[in-house]
Image (tube, rainbow, N blue to C red; front, side):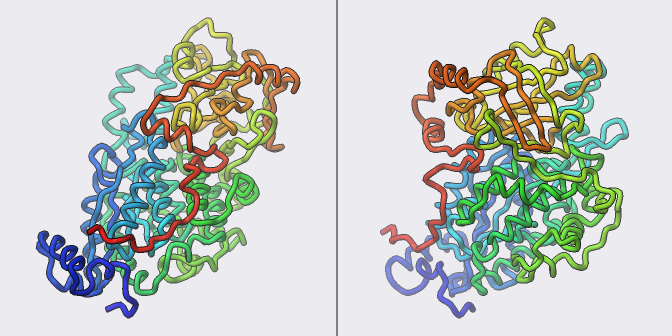
Amino acid sequence: MTAKRLRSQAWFGGDGKNAIMYRSWMKNQGMAPDAFDGRPVIGICNTWSELTPCNAHLRDLAERVKRGVYEAGGFPVEFPVMSLGESNLRPTAMLYRNLASMDVEESIRGNPIDGVVLLVGCDKTTPSLLMGAASCDLPTIVLSGGPMLNGRVRGKPVGSGTAVWRYSEDVKAGHMTLKDFMDAEAGMARSAGSCMTMGTASTMASMVEALGVALPENAALPAVDARRGVLAQLTGRRIVEMVREDQKLSSILIPAAFRNAIRVNGAIGGSTNAVLHLIAIAGRIGVQLGLDDWDRLGRDIPTIVDLQPSGRFLMEEFCYAGGLPVVMKALAEAGKLEGDAPSVTGRSIWENVQAAENFDPEVIRTFANSLTPEGGIAVLRGNLAPDGAVIKPSAATPALMQHRGRAVVFDTIVDYHRRINDPDLNIDETSVMVLRNCGPRGYPGMAEVGNMGLPPKILARGITDMVRISDARMSGTAYGTVVLHVAPEAAAGGPLALVREGDMIALDVAARSLVLEVPEAELARRKGAWQPLTPPPSGYQSLYIQHVLQADRGADFDFLVGCRGADVPAHSH
């Protein structure tokens, strides 16, 4: 058994009244006495839920993890936490990311757990679980549920999410019938798992692998691939070893890990949502990370993974080409990765990936044949976004990366839906669509509505992209020249609240500039007349609005930033 007295023994060790109570109640599940003999107790934090389709198979993976824990001499205990499904949860799963992280943090700290396996899948389950675990800093390892099999519609591959955005625009433009759109529904999601595009779920599965907190190949193995089950079993074995080695999360989530993840995000054409999540995770573990780091580290990273929504292929092809280890090896060989960063394997990142082989250079390209020469996330600043805004160059239209146009303003998402299909809307392809009051406070929760659909009269002319600006987010499966996460948001009195119909806006991605061409005196006059939205009177949304930080700080709660550790609490009796 482990030489060091483990945290769980503060519950189960000894012959006193409290120890007897803890053990006896656990034994009503049929557990043998030697389960409490000092072996590592491994918490399996499971986000399984039938309301979270991406995670509906995680019960099976949990059983595989348990098998590995038992094999390594540990004692597995599975526990549920709030599950966040982007596809069903309203008004947006992001509203509850911080709440779920609190659930995770307190569940870990308050229970007899020595190490934890985080079972994640859909977009917000990965960051929420890692944020909560980072606040406790026990030995921790992440296991993603994996992507779905490729979608197939009329014999052609389609990407979940990405196809919905494209097809819905085609219907509005009259290029696709409503019947064909309805028929496509059946082929988009053919198996268990998360989106098979490089959406936020696949991006965050890649991020945890790049950070070193998941085993190699975590990102790309399909959910239904037998190798995903093997990975789960190996994860169970490894967490027991990590407890015995006392390899805490803080020993892996060091500054170099976050630098590596940012570079990997550029190389894979990852989701803009990763910006918010990594900043929040870094804040929990005590690493300084900001928007300027994203821009500085990602600026010279080419996108070499040719996946939707930026490219052509889907996660199955990415897996078969060799997955994320191939990408990380390419970055390391180009001097773009800190290979000596540690990982949960007990080896360095470079040792994890040095033997990786690229089996399909059309899917994972070379630097010389990159999808875009500069991937990553571009951070824009100017009087319209004093604290920053982001854009994903790999998913944008090159011709629109420098653009000046007249603002067409939508005050809320309801206002947008009310007006966008009006044939008399004063808008053309040179206009700049502005959506506000959809940020952290304004929605509330910062929903994925930033990639506003274009007006039908524009689509009917064959135009498929326009510059769009908002304080909202967009799905990682989405695409277009979309400026997001404008900070401060409109609901907090940011300059986005002061834009008026007809104002000129200048975007220059190369110069990292976003400017509202209105004199400062006029903006000051408008600010004096501005009135904030009325917050909800009570409940969680009120708490959220009062304490959420702005997008440039990861939209975490102000009182959750920092690592609080996992000291053993006082007895319950």
